[in-house]
Length: 185
Image (cartoon, rainbow, N blue to C red; front, side, top):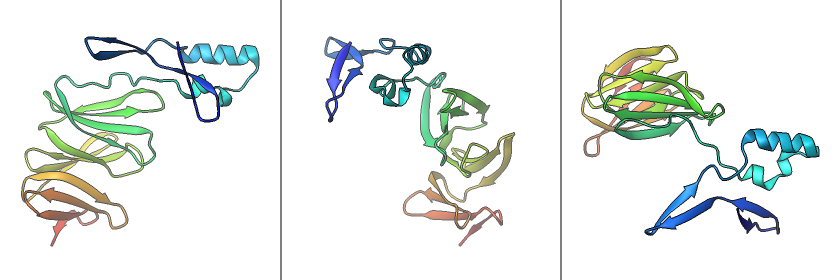
């Protein structure tokens, strides 16, 4: 176990690693598990809030992978959910950061270029796809599709006006009104 010091003099456990052929390999199972931290804290009757090793621990998200590639990742406003889109097969996954695992997954008809949460959590989101459509999803699945006038590159959401901006080829930006369901000039 490697010990490093923090400003204030407290020694904390750092992650173990080795170097082989100039490539660092990190040991992800070198520290205590959450269960071991909880058992030690109850035995010693001390709070985990003050335990530097507990505060600097590393926890891994389960199933955070795509078969080929992931093209875009976004985080919900409440920071509890992570949305990601991938290709081959085209799919969208939403992960729960509190449970450290996959919340749900939807297969899509086309690859997605971008993904944006429209609410503070996972219940409403939109994906910009390679077939020039924006595909809206609710917690129950696909809700609606709208065709974009030109191929898009990126999405941005203005919650105060309920407008979705689509950056297209060149310097073109299209503004979509979510209340009306139309593109504005």
